[in-house]
Image 1: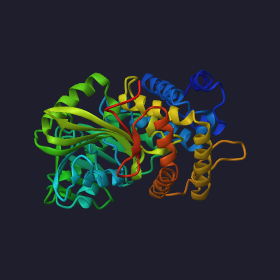
Image 2 (image 1 turned 180 degrees about the vertical axis):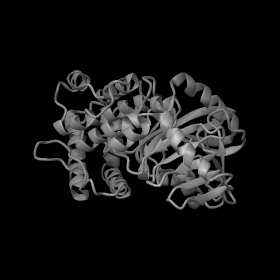
Image 3 (image 1 turned 30 degrees about the vertical axis):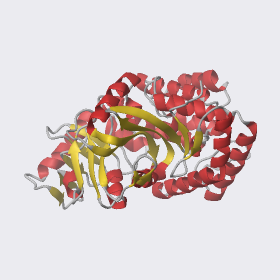
Image 4 (image 1 turned 90 degrees about the vertical axis):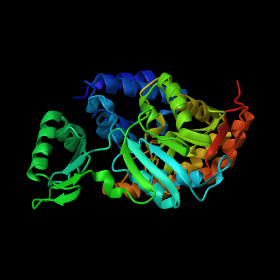
Amino acid sequence: MSDPRFVDRMNREHFGGTLPPGFLEGVRELPTERDDVKAFVDRMFRFMNAAEMRARDLSVLQGEILGSLLARILPGAWQGRVPPITVKGRHRKIDELIRDNRYLGRRPSGSMLDLGCGFPPETTIDSADRLEGWRIHGSDPSMPAFMVHDPEGAYATFDSRGKMIYCQPSAPTVESWNALLADPEETARRFRMIRERFGDASPGLTEGSDGSRLFVDPARSFERPGLTFGVGGIGQVETSEQDVVRCFNVMYYFDDDFREKALEWFASILAEGGILLVGGDWAFTTECRYFLYQREGGAMRPREFSFSLDNVVPLGLVPFFALHERDRGLNLLARLVRTLRRDAGFLARYYGVTDGLRAEHEICPRGADGFYGSVDPEMDPGELWSRAGEISDTIGSELGADAVAVLEGAGWDAGLNEIGLVSVSLESPPA
């Protein structure tokens, strides 16, 4: 149940009561009886303030995402577990970087650990398709032992002990999520009953006459020469001499103390000279930010921080998704975005480009009231994020050089990296 007083207080405290009515309408769907939800929203707005975002930068779509999805992807909805959320095509640019970068050179072959690959492991499969000749291992602590679909298309995943890891409706509306999560134990029991009807099923997919489906050891069905999967998170995967470790959309959930320990472990599993990419993004490498570290002398050396320019006025909420104040990536992103936004000339050019692109692609165009809107509710999510990817790419190509100039003027050693993202050196940051 949502408490409108909480939303109104957040609006007053962080935006002086100026948030768009359409944005607020969506946010008022939040289950604010949950302390973790309230803490997340407060933290998110404070990071927006740190980046000097304004109410006019928020859209109806973002309010809808907050109200319908946020509470369902926080660990508090899953007994503290990190949900294995992913989306196909997310790392298309990151794969290009892995193939050819200034630290490893152009590699026709190599080895990579994709840590926190989610399930289904779409991003790891994408990488194996793009990085032909590489040996790739995807691992996630929430990799399921079996997956059950009900006749309506909702699904649940379970570990080897029969404990539900995650569930998701076929159409992720507020109502359908509430139906699944109002009583998680009952939901788990219902999916277990479907599982039991299949009896002693063999590994792979078994389909029921009513439209239900059972997938036993589902990750194994995706394996092939050069592509393997396993269960495990940071500090849990037995491996060594990796050329690349990619750990995206994972560190959001951990504080900086954990990060320091994780860096020690990453150093132990990388080959000398190998690189670590740690950060986050969304579909088509939109709203991307990441650190690049390189193992040197057995330790991790920070090399650069890179980000896509759609983070300045994002379509989604990934740029401000954080569960801890001491989120190193988000604090640095907010600092860099703030620097860009304080340059009046750059910001005016940015609004000119992004507002034109939103109108052209019919994604959250700016209305007569001066605020960003939403999208056609009939638009397929894949089409939505494909268009978002085109917008992100165009913003980067048209404004990348301008952004670099602004950051250089502020004392950063900045440039555009191999995949067109803005990159700042971590070896000589300004005071």
